Amino acid sequence: MDQNNHTDENNLPTNSHIDLIEVPLTPDEQAYTSNLPTEKSNIDNNENTIQPAESIGDAPEKKRLTDRQKKLAAFILAGLILAGIVTGTIFANSKGKGQPTTNPTPTMTEPNKNPTTTQTPTTQTKPTSPETSPTTIQNELPLTVENLELDSSLLSNPEILASKFNELITEWINSGATKENTEKAFASNMELNEYAEILAAEYDDICIKALLIDGWESDPALMQWVNKKTLIHSATLSVYFKTQNPVMGDYEPYKRWYSCEDIESFSVDGSDIATLIISNHQQDNSDKNRALALFNGESADEVYFEEITFITDSGKLKVSQANAYR
Image (cartoon, rainbow, N blue to C red; front, side, top):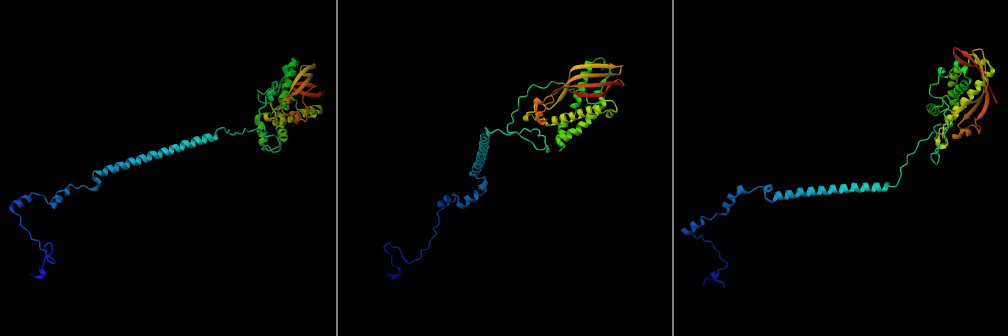
């Protein structure tokens, strides 16, 4: 036995080359196998049925899940934002509750050299206004010469003449005491006494022309009477400007008025001259404002006598002589 062709215990040759021998199929086997599809033909036949990845059945389901997740996330986010707004509003309201706002009330500036300086009292309790002063001051008509003149027909009735005369003196002494002039006085940056003096002089000219004869300046007694009226007028106007603050105790701005207490005598010389001596009462409302302090405690309340001579001039009565005494 050849040593190179020995067999092992399984009777298989070792160190030998094994050749595969193709065994031909019988006619029946060939007929059977020809009806079986090959792997390649299956792949070729299904090539046209393979769909791209985006049209595979699972893909649309994954896409819909993504949209729902986005909508859900947006809904949750909106809810969180709304909750934050509501919470912030509740917190702001609870924080501001019980804390009153401060609305300062503007007040008229206290009269001084600098009207822009506001004097604000610590307690701004509105005082209870006492009974108002009697309305004796006539302000229905504009202050003109024609409206202030006395008609000569009054010579026939001395009581009405005396009453009408005092009404016109009251109009004169308070002329210019208006809210508009008060605002101008404070805006002028002038001292109120100075402003009142300048303004009073403008009204004085109208009143003097309406009540007095021409050339009155030549009579010393008449000039003294006129000067007394103009000084009272200027002082009244100044104190009126200074008593405009109810918080400081000015329940009414300052006013002064005149009334006839009695007619002492009345004489007529001819048809165009008459002399009237009357007991007059000068009053003011200094009990309803700070006028007493501004007048150094002196009240205007007094009774005095006034002797007035009227002459007729073109149907109007004019003062030709005047004298006041106590």
